[in-house]
Image 1 (cartoon, rainbow, N blue to C red):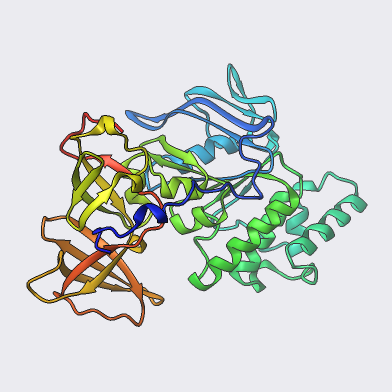
Image 2: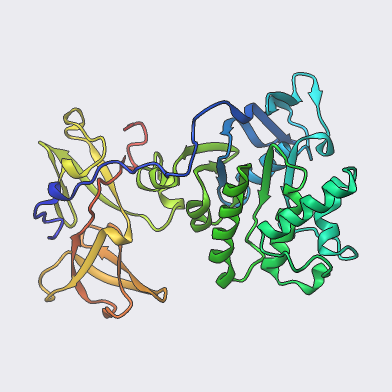
Length: 386
């Protein structure tokens, strides 16, 4: 079908189900930020930031460099003070309302981006560093428990310098978990790993956090990382939360163009809603395929969000079709083709790696999505709202 719909309404699926292992939004929050603001001179790095994180939840702050996510993490850790607002950990105010609890007095663990292991200490001594005031037998039992949990039971006496990057990360995680913190913070936890290790370590770290039941907040600019490990994702821009929700919901139902464009490749089909349908550069779309588009918007100019896997490019004779291939990106498993439509819109089509199409080839673009599509007011009509 060429947007040119066949029976698209039959392909519409229900809303995304919640992840089965998340406690999102249940019980009392372990961590709360209420109106937190942090300035650096005239620049506001974090502005009126409010957020609750619940017991056992893994929440990721996701955004580009300079969006305020690392500043937020440092505020949570007690490495800096907020100018306004308050931070509450397990019911205790640790910042704001005239109080400020130092970092080493908070029940908050921190896994640094570079792991920050002590090279002069053994693996076991690194893990025991934060609990050295415990009785010796309890220290030994806790170190044994955690090294077993992270798969390093045979590495007690090794030096951190003898370990791989993934092993060092596990030691850093075990050290942060040792004091049984109320909240664990992870600062770009996979950025120092080789690409081949990142997926494996993401899965391992999530499994460890879920087994321990610790409440965790991670910070990253890597969309794939955030979507794969998180119970909820908070997408940040300019010191504020643009959108927060389950990874599937944030990806499939972005509430702003920024979120849509930041989470993967985004193409937009421009069109006008008229009598239950939208005429676009790839044909007529039925409103049943569009999220939250009701008759009250009749006559509105809109842009429909389409991802590369929502579309297919079909080679066609020169005198027909919808547009032309302008670029081709090879990712290994697939090709992503950039298509310039005749009306000027640019969209992306994902194909199997063996499906090779020539540049400048004339194509028909088919809509193959099996879910409702998000939409936004046209950029020229900034006053419109969904």
